[in-house]
Each structure stands twice: as C-alpha cells, then as structure tokens.
Length: 418
Ligand SMILES: *Cc1c(COP(=O)(O)O)cnc(C)c1O
Image (cartoon, rainbow, N blue to C red; front, top):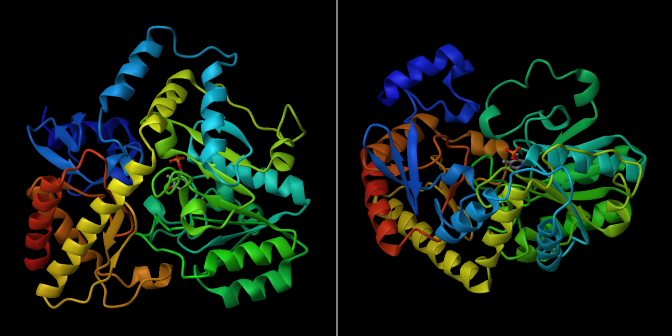
C-alpha cells in the first residue's frame, strides 16, 4: 500500500493516524520503510535527506553499523531481565565523566519520565511545590509541564484533562527575560522548588540563551534555595561532550537526558549531584521506578553510541552546522530577506519573520504558511525537515558536504518560490 492509503487506514485504528501529533504531516505523512545513513526511504519509492532524524536522537545517522552490531549481539542474549546489568554502570560512568553536574544517574524510558522525576526530586529536596518553566518550552507530555508548551502542542490551547490543581503550581515566564524572573522569584521564592529550562530552546525552533542568561539563572536559584534543572533531552550529547552545561560553562543541580543517549532506542535519564540523587529510591525516599528502566537494548545502543561521540566528532559537527547556516544566510541575503537563521553546533532553523527571535512570542510572529510552502518544496526535492516552524532541524555525522550542498539548493528553491 502507498502512504496515502496507509494513512486512511491508520486513521481508523490510531487517533489521527499517528502515535505522536507532530507526525501528522499534511495532506498525509510518508510512511517509512528504511533508514540508512543520512537518508530515510518511504513505501512510495522515495528517499529523503533527513534533517528530522527522529526529532534528534540519530546523531550518527540511521542504522549506524557499529550500533546495529552491538545491539544485534545483545538481542541474541535477551531483551529485558528485571535485574541489573554491568552495562548500566558503564553508561552511567560515561555520563558522569562527560557531564559537569552528573555524579549519579537514574535511567528511565523517555525524556518525559526524566523531567517528571527531576521535578518530583526537586520538590522533595526543597520541600516546596511550585516550579517555573519558560513559555514555549517542551519538557515532555506529562501534567506538570503541559502549560504553554512547545513541540506538538505548539499553538494549541493547553490540554484538557490536565487539572488546574496541577498547573497552578507551574509558573510561566518568557525565555531570556531576567527582569520577569527576578520579579517572580522575589514574590514566590518561599514556594519555588525549581526552575526548569531547555538551555537552548529546541521545541520552538531553535532559540539560544542570551549571553549571561544561564549564569543569571544559576545565581538567582543558588541564592534562593531553588533547584536549577537543565532539560538537555535535545542538547545533551549533541552540542558538546558534556552538553549545554559544558558548551555554556554553567552547571545546573539536575539534568535530564533522552534522545541521543539511547542510540536510537527509547531512553531517558536523570542525573545530578550525589546529595540529591541519593534521595531517589531505594537509596532514599523519593519514589521512581520502571519495568524497562535501564533496558539492556537501549543501554547497549547508548553505550556504543557514546564511543563515537568524542571531541573530533563535535568539531566535525560544528563545521557541518556552520556550513549549513552560512549557506542559508547567503541564500537569504541574495533574496534580500531578513529572516533570522538560528542555531548552533548541529542545530539549525530559519524563522520566517523579520523579528529577532529570543522567546516564544517572537517565534510565534513567524509566518507558518511560508514555512509550510518551504517545507513542501523541500519534501518534493527529497529533503525532509521537521514539518513545523517550531521544531529544530538536526545534522548527523552521516551528512556529507555534498548532501549539505544539495540540501542548500533545495532550500534556495524553497525560499525563492515563496
Ligand atoms: C523530546 C523532549 C522531551 C521528551 O522526551 P520523550 O522521550 O519524547 O518523552 C523532553 N524535553 C525536551 C527538551 C525534548 O526535546
């Protein structure tokens, strides 16, 4: 069956025909059959250079042979044990070696579980209930954080089914706004358990922190007994060996991971200072558990992936990212357009607006019809980027300079036909 028919069929059995909202590409999504290196293949016989990369995890490209081999070996020995494995220690050690704030790690199954557990821990440690999140930030799909959230929920009203009693403890501020935070902390510090943020907002496109902003958050949280949580589900292992905290030189109290850490398999993790982490059960009293926590397949894939993410890797990714962003800037300049090209390291996005973009409200000023037309032209030219203005595009190790040049040609077409 072709994608169009599969989608019709899917809608009878899966709400909206998909298992996660952003995948419902209009008029219908292409159904994948295979991924290989930088390319994704569909059931209709097309192939695409892939800059979605499963929304971030595939930093080595699709089906990277060493990871596939390690996983095959593990598969033949079983898939879940319900008892610990040595590889969990090895991967935890690797996280601790790389990540400045990480002294201990708890592995879970998704980024969603990681942020939920981190917030619970921060509340337990401080004995306070309220948290601060930034408008447009996405920390997964659980109730504590589903307020003015980015990603698939972008632009939708907050979800029905989330009780007001839950979200009244989630306070919102604009990203990069020191004044708003100072004023909020002044009022609420007796009740504030945590500030949680994506150090680079990757679920409203790509918004970096202003210079000094992360340092400011570090200082104001430390002074007021508030836990600083970096949600590095995207930036972790993508922008530096030790993630955003290494890249920007600011160390939070707790960090959450997902995506890349699982080497293409489902995973999440929570890490941080020992004094906090030892509050987690069974070392401490803060409950956290999961049937598939530390799953041997995900752990093996993550462990093998980490072997390939060294300093040289990040240098090479920085070069690829620059090539892409410079190329885009040149195209826009030739077309006399002022759209900002956002990104750092291997992350990038164009905003179809004449404004600078430092927060959610500025991101929202982008022209999503222009974005959709650009997206469709790219797709027609064999280039797949995430189908929303408010997602981030990613590069992988597998994308060659030639691939990038081909992509830039398609992007030029996409921008000029607007
Ligand atoms: C993807 C993402 C999550 C959620 O991770 P899942 O594994 O999809 O639950 C949380 N935070 C950020 C920053 C993300 O990008």
